[in-house]
Image (cartoon, rainbow, N blue to C red; front, side, top):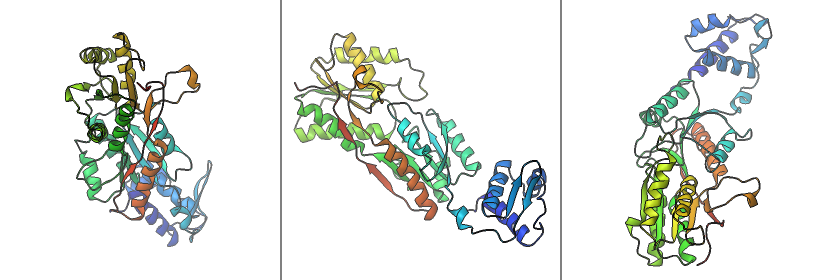
Length: 364
């Protein structure tokens, strides 16, 4: 992998100090002069100077400038132990899913400094953000892509360069890149199995039209539970055309409410639904109640994720699959750090989920 520009500038200025081009006690040239000499951005120069200061070569004195204080420096292992700078691009986040991942990424004890950007699922914006972060010389990248069906060209280029990349909450099939994701097949199975154990034999599936492996894997697990229980499943009981909750969508929520009203009205025999995300579960519950069917009195719902509630007794809580979001964030950073230590190593990590009982399911 090509040596980072800031590292090159660091080494050139360090060598100038060691060779006494810049004498101990002298002031370094002004920033504009250094920028012109090294032909780099201000951000790159700042990082190089920060490293020189950390290694004991220079010291910045307010209103006076930057001075050379040693031509030998201190141990560079101090600088090498600094947290790496990692770029992060996520589609979006809210209190039901994403906020805890962001919290783990931004935790002061995470072992990294993370610069976070949001794409809202826009393919061009995602590509531009990745390239901008790499140009600003982050040392690794964490990406939650808007689609699993399309691999951003920038990611393919980074993988070819063995640049540290970790894919979050998604999988790029056939691409040798590290990823961390919930075991969504097993999670989908857990959700459907809970409804079956409660006595429901006609189940529906509600999901968005998003093209991500997360949705597909949860659907697969849903089918596995049917097969294990020897219960037939009718694909007509699947609503997959919902779009209002997809990041960047301009579809009104009211449109999806009406779609689901028509969907549940046509399927009175379905008494339990697995819903692949919390916000869709909220929409489904609203649609059912508008059709005169209560949750859980008439219909049970198992969703994925649940926002934190300050006072649980004051809010409706769905029975849901809880993902270990904090661990996902921590592991994403670890995957990048491991690649910094051993470029090219690839690990695809599945995180177990668990079912949490809430107010939306009861035994029949």
